[in-house]
Image (cartoon, rainbow, N blue to C red; front, side, top):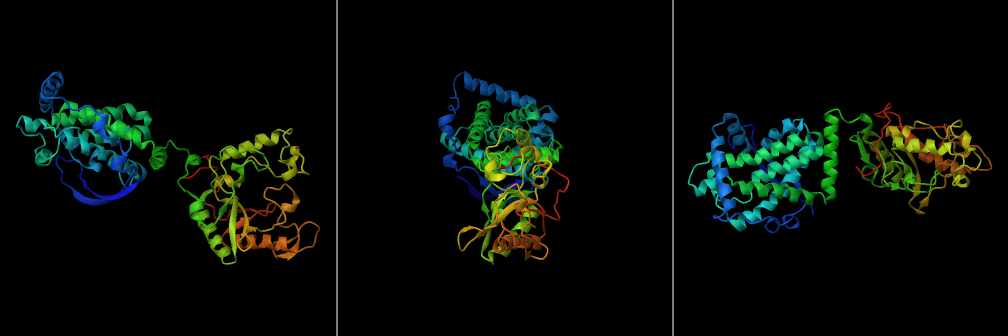
Length: 464
């Protein structure tokens, strides 16, 4: 269950203290505390104060104190002590290969903040349950980071919140940039060691926290919202580092179900009722996508037609290049005539390219073209256009049965005056809001001022 909360982040630069400014940030947790794994049940109890395990904790505490003689390592440990997302992200920016910030990498930042906030919830119960004394308290010594002492004395030592957060950040960033996973995980491991060096945690606290981070992340992978945000973060990283081809970038596209909420979707190429007779490559979900600019114009068309008693019914919008390639392969197989009676009864398969019904490039692939018709809200039926979508024949031409430029009907045996007038209602509404028609299909329109006139996209059709 998602839960949106407002929390205060102490935003600190690379400093040795908690100084900084407070800033409100909306956080969407993917699960509530009760929906996350209970670490009391998942993790072993911390070592008793006798035995080899606790002896190891003491030896590691002494090891940590020896590290304080290394000025460079001490500086890292001090920075790792700052309980701030921005400070944490600054530490991981170098091994990640990209500066992480709210402004520069908003999708990656959102993934980290939402995920870490969700996982952070799991440490509270075991801390309160075990009430383990911290090493600096047990030995009555000062922390390397004395500014933390008063706050840490109030909280149990097991597990380590800093270590869990640092290791979880390393795991998350490794999914965004797997090529740097080794370096990222090494930094995540070091983040935990820093808590031993400053004297805030026992080694067993840190070890348990790394496991707790992995347990928490495994739970996040069951959240569709988390997976969607992870995909956005991965795309953002690829785009900002030049690894994403422009044709794979869906960031300027929107879901028409959201952009034009009154439209009806009947995505023919996701179904088997189309001229191919099978689901077309690249259509992973029955959704329609368009560029933001085209979708805004289509919303204006929809609002216009609603006043006249019509809704838009969309058959296809953005079409990936892999779908066009599927059409080309299908056209080459002249033995496949399954859907010939329904879509091309009079057109020989070997002439589909020549007559312009199939092409190796499609305007749909640029993202600002749509195939659609009208739906009458009074009769609750599709408006009769005198022909079906994707009919290969001259009857589909807007000029068949009349002059589109004047709207004057020309009597014929196939298209009635009412059917021609219905085509003109759709055509004129589309043209009023910046779309241009083509001469061969009454249902096909492209935004005149399309934002990507020379880019043919390849990403699949699925909910963005």
